[in-house]
Image (cartoon, rainbow, N blue to C red; front, side, top):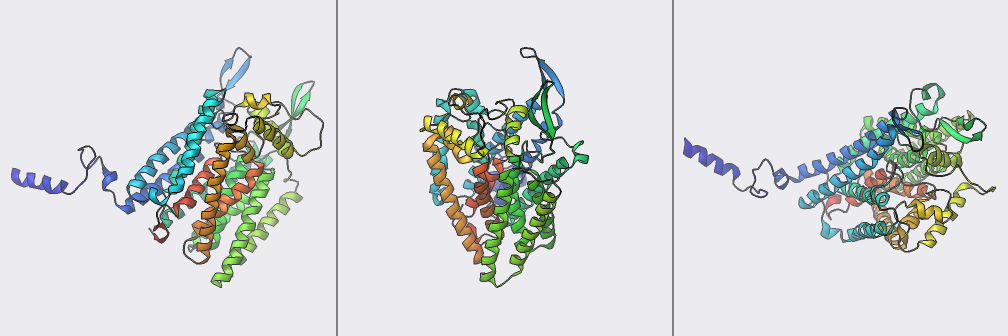
Length: 499
């Protein structure tokens, strides 16, 4: 009996690999199959986007809950001031685990570093960002960030961790499942945004942009009712960036996926996101949304020539016309208006209390070139290493009226300097080259529609970024999409994987 038991134990463990001599239950990573590794990478990416969606909600529902008093300035403290820091912590956490998932994927040959030597560029960006961070005056802010718009060194690491996690999703069926959740998040944020923009429902849906700061009077600060959509993403600008990325997934999935249920779900979600984007009332929302439709329409037109199938092109044209109808309806009802400047200063002055109330000089210049000039001047004064990530003191000392230029490229040059800016541009160029190859492969049916979707998502984000800022509530979606672009070349044979 004992011999039989001993023999059974020997044969059970025969041929198995173990970490540090441990039991087989504790080292499942070494023994998992390729399919299990693909599942792990896909499931984690889904968990990551769900965490990014959920973590912002408490910030909204605690905005009127008092928890103390700052006696030094006689100011009431609200609970949301604590929760806003959790958003950055969540980005760091999911990014850190993303790096671990990347290492597992490399171990299981889902990502081959030897096939991706160009990853040295992101590595250089991260390492040099540390140098830029250490050179700044406010080390604490530079490492940990501040509020939802200040991206410290650890936030930057979180972004690249999300990029790494996206790159591990090499099976196309896993990409589609991830797209389902991403589109679902977009629909959810859009519904919240629409409810925020309707006066009757805005009373029950929390929003930091229901009223916009308009100036001072004898009675104190004055506000106007505006009901601007933000979703649970803190600002209309963040909503614009997120819905730009997700609309590209929804539109391309609607056009090219084989399953009718998914096509219907994506179509409904796209309509909701289109309406919410327009109700954000800022330029990047209209620019990003328009870019999604135009670029997708061009791809569908070219694709119809290769495949001799006009249905996707016709469907995209119909979607474009419907989007135009939604815009026309909201415009006619006076629900659409561009309020970029008022939103910018309400956000920084009233919501975050980090800047003044607006421009002090009397000028008719459009707000964007005005802020870009400030940003470029600050960048010129701190050309090599920048001011350090979100070093407001240095920025304001150079005469800027706000901490951001509302141009992500100028912000990058201003905060992290010319060297990191140049390396980031190199990374973006490499990503765009991969995107072009993905779209070309899609035309010839060498890869699925997800390649086209992520390419459109990244390109449209980069377009609207000329009028937007990065944020811990919006930028993670871009980095996941960029990682998905790179996932198609994670291993040389990945394009042939069907799961």
